[in-house]
Image 1 (cartoon, one colour):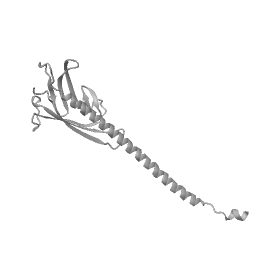
Image 2 (cartoon, rainbow, N blue to C red; image 1 turned 60 degrees about the vertical axis):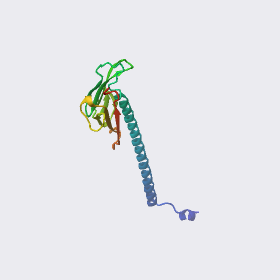
Image 3 (cartoon, one colour; image 1 turned 45 degrees about the horizontal axis):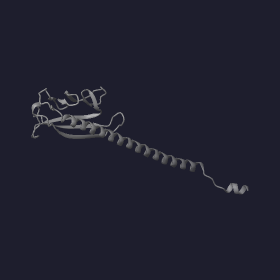
Image 4 (cartoon, rainbow, N blue to C red; image 1 turned 45 degrees about the vertical axis):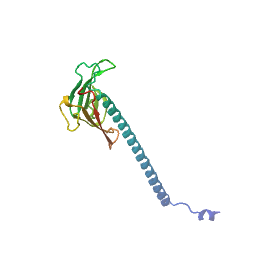
Length: 187
């Protein structure tokens, strides 16, 4: 029996250390891979959420800007475009819900003072983490941009948004552009 025990071979300390090192490398690779997959998933979810928010804001802006100058009573109550700059647009229209003249003012600003630019409507934040909001104004022919508010009949809106920098080191951005014909202007 003593002979049988002494003839059995086990693992040496060096063999165990090598096996442990290989196992540790495999586990480390798997953990790194899992972490990267989670970061990619978070990035994609944030990009989708950002894009949905920008599309919603763009839809609201289009719908609202189309009302510029609207007044079914045909009386001049001062409805129309008030100011039109590259980063802000203000206009008035007759609100059929309240039967009164309303003003809408879209501004590209850092409303909260946090360093992230926002799109606001009458002081209320519509979208955060906006890198660019620009308005380009055109006359009826859409040939040449115009600056005079009395000549504006359509507007191109461009919004570039980014994923919140605090949540993600490498930011994803999306740019949306649309044209809005203001059907009530010039009537």
